[in-house]
Structure formats: structure tokens, C-alpha cells
Image (cartoon, rainbow, N blue to C red; front, top):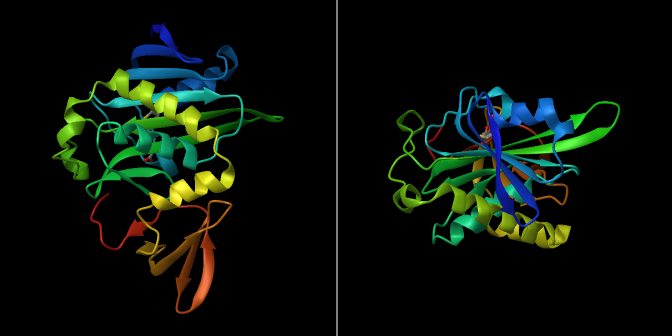
Length: 229
Ligand code: BTN
């Protein structure tokens, strides 16, 4: 396995590997060898991982991880991807917590993993973006996404990541809410249907069922109106 330094994107250092099991797994095992804001892009992942033990299938797509020395808010990478895609006039929405949807299809998944041993060491933000069809996940007709140069998109994401990092918590939450796919929608969580009333300051969902309010802070939700995996 050959990992090569490619170039800098502002103060990010971009490394590339032709094939690897998972860029997140690599940074988890080697976090102490890389500096803050190192990015590893893989042309192919053989064991891409998703949230909640899902697998992430990709081929000729954009798959990379960014290593940070500080904790990362889960909304940040989702907003960075959304804003970067806006620069191609591609309008997307965020399904809580940080999936990106385009025309009701999941085109991007984000896996954030923190490294805690005796203390916090690093946060790894893994991002997978579908730039090709995935029939098995009902991802097709990606239109403008097919033409995107993945290195250019990666640079745009890094630059937007920095811009959004500068927003205070309330401004970031406002932007997140404006681009939410689930706010004021009906969702299914653990087999029950809820109305999403708000997104709390701590990032959890405020939901309502039979007049009772509660918060959802972890797990997978499904939208009532969207058919996807
Ligand atoms: C999800 O939707 O469940 C999250 C998917 C995250 C996939 C990316 S691809 C780059 C990085 N390496 C991995 O193994 N996973 C993340």
C-alpha cells in the first residue's frame, strides 16, 4: 500500500492511496503519524464502513477522510458538502444527522469517529460521495454529479469546511435547519412514527408523538415520504 502526498489545499495536506480497506480505519490506526487537517483520498476502498455498522460501497466515487486534532460538530461536514455541491448548482438536503440527499436519493454518507484512549486524541471525518449509479441503493440519474472532477469537489469541500467552522453554533444550526430534509416532516424511528418539530441546540431532534415531545440523539431515522436504503 503506497500512500503519497499530493498537494496542499489551504492548510490541509492531501494524501492519496490507490486501494485501501477504509480511509477511516487507516487514520484510526495511524492518527499519531499525521498532522491536523490531513486528508486521505482512496481511489478504491475494499471495506468501506458506514454509520451503525453499515458497509459503504463505492467504485469510481469520492471517498476520503480528514483527520482533525479537535472534536468536530456532526453538522459541519454535511454543510461543507452541501455548500460545495451548491457551487455546481446541485441542490441537496441533509437528512439527520448527516446524510446528503439529492432528488430523494442518498448521495453522501459521513462517518465521524473520535479516538479516545486515556484522553481525546483525534477526530476522523470520513466522507463518501456517490458520483456514479448504485442500482442496489436506488441511486441513479445523478445528472450533473456524473461530470464532477472529484479532486475539484474535494477542494471545494475543504474550503467550505473552513468557512463553516468560522460560524458560531447558532449560525451553523440555523444553516443546518434551513437545509434540513427532516424538519417538519414525519419520520420513522424504532418502528414508530414521529413529527419532527425542531433541531435542538445540542444537535438532537425534537420530535412529537401523540402530543408528547421527546428528543432523538442517536440512531437511524427513516423519512415517511422517501423510499431509500
Ligand atoms: C454512512 O452513511 O453510513 C457513512 C458512510 C461513510 C463512508 C465514508 S467513505 C470514506 C470513509 N471511509 C470509510 O470507511 N467510511 C467513510
